[in-house]
Length: 243
Image 1 (cartoon, rainbow, N blue to C red):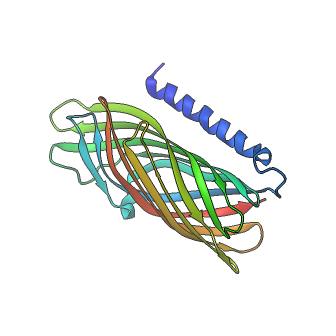
Image 2: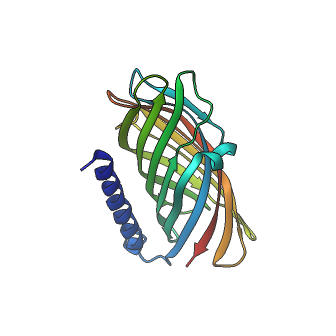
Image 3: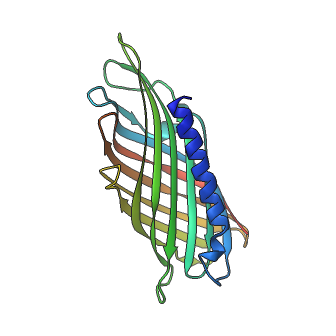
């Protein structure tokens, strides 16, 4: 069985276990009134990364405005269980990117299969209105094919997982809910990673809201087989369903 297939199966099992854990999160939020949120979304993400095997990397620089030309297929969603003082959430992103774009001399095309899972627990201390302390794990898998002119293609696969800690601030004013998230992590597989999200949601009623914002992730990872050093950033838009 191919390594990429094994990793995909492992990723599927990981997502399934995280969603089941979130569904069972009333145990974690104790006697709170639990509310669930499902947010399918699109992240029009650009990237500026050095990627590939050590000594044979390339620089992929794609503006997020070119995302629709670059994406082959993708899916993303957030699933969350939230009480008054506790929350448990899982964020899943899968996307296949594979179009020709401006690359350094000697590189003709880069294809990237990207799989990102984040799961975290949040706690709101007594007296801290709308401010949550969060801690979780970030799983990142990349399957990369780089076509170099006049030489064989270079294919590499890598996955890594790291913890992170951060804060989340979500004040609400009338129908508007504002979102600020920031975290830092790494130290196990990646050397360092940090991310932030700025956004807002407009609630049409108690069940549906339109969500939009901007997200930035910086990851510095390198081992004997693979390098991923750079940033991903772009606009997010989705629909929040509360039940």
